[in-house]
Amino acid sequence: NAGVTQTPKFQVLKTGQSMTLQCAQDMNHNSMYWYRQDPGMGLRLIYYSASEGTTDKGEVPNGYNVSRLNKREFSLRLESAAPSQTSVYFCASTETGGRSPLHFGNGTRLTVT
Amino acid sequence: GESVGLHLPTLSVQEGDNSIINCAYSNSASDYFIWYKQESGKGPQFIIDIRSNMDKRQGQRVTVLLNKTVKHLSLQIAATQPGDSAVYFCAENGGSNYKLTFGKGTLLTVNP
Image (cartoon, rainbow over all chains, first blue to last red; front, side):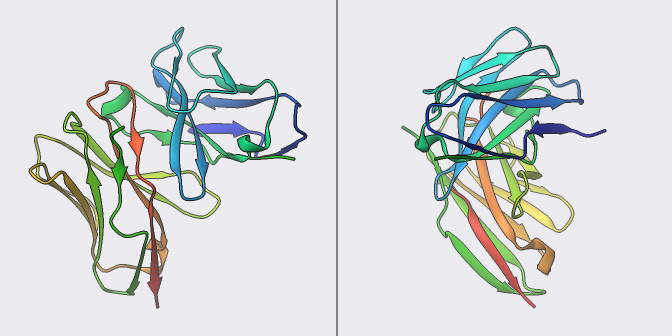
């Protein structure tokens, strides 16, 4: 039982390049989330998917798109990376949304030069 | 907008002492609160949660206290150990069925 798995662990992009961060969970959870973590800013919600087939914007969605591919997988895409998107990205999942614990992956450390 | 905050960004304690990490919240609609521990290079790890119909909840060496009157949440760690050194985050749901909002974190350092 791996929990929440994120790939890649590290990535360096040049400004303007695109990439997709992958996330998969094996806990049969309904809800999945993407957060970014910056020094002194805590965790900020980018997008979430309350259930398979739905996605919604969080606090900082600009510059990102998401896809809930199936119940297990939720990907985050940067179409044209900017230095301001340098951050650590965490995927999380939970069974019942805002009233149960989120289970986090170990993050993707992204640097945009 | 409403947000979750922390009183102390850093806390240093001696091994064996009890630690108290505080959190203030401002969204009166929040009915679910949670504490996470994050070690360097890892994702946040769930510690303990509490619903608004409770004032106190205990786990193994940890206790969460909720004071709704002053909108205050605290995490108490008993007999703090070096392995407890980490950043601790509180989070609230703002009454949402789907989202948690996180505070900025407190760095706990345990001195041997």
